[in-house]
Length: 181
Image (cartoon, rainbow, N blue to C red; front, side, top):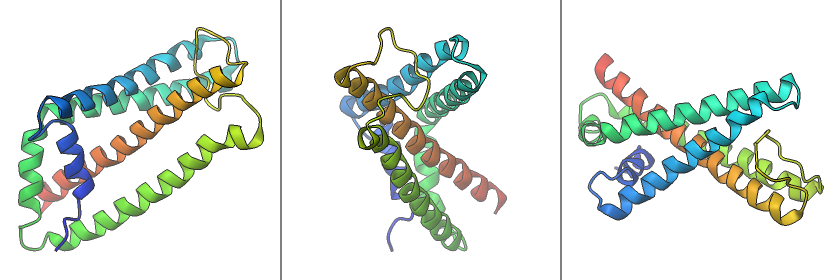
């Protein structure tokens, strides 16, 4: 029987559970990207680009901050979560739920990767070199190189936010399913 939540246990390993300094460092880099992304969106809220851009920046900043807080909480309780994940798969009556949630999780991630890939490729395909989210930068993104650097950072940080949000939310769902059994 394959592990239905291999991505979530992989996330826990990336958080440093059972790993060494290298894994912890990878986690701190990913969390730093999430917080830097949120920090670059906050100044855009008050920038004079209009209320729609401010609302979009506020929503994106709140999602990034939420992902950062969730990651820090999961990191704090990662050993307990690893034990819980190892116990959930062996309890009678729980494997059906785990398989269904695992399939939904895989479909969600596939859908997410397709949408984010299209989102990341759009400016280069269309030739319209404007940021799709109102990120604040200390310089203008008027050249292809500057735009590519900022847009690559924005895309990678959004991918990290989306991936960890889904994985962390699935772990929380597992805890709820375990408690409600």
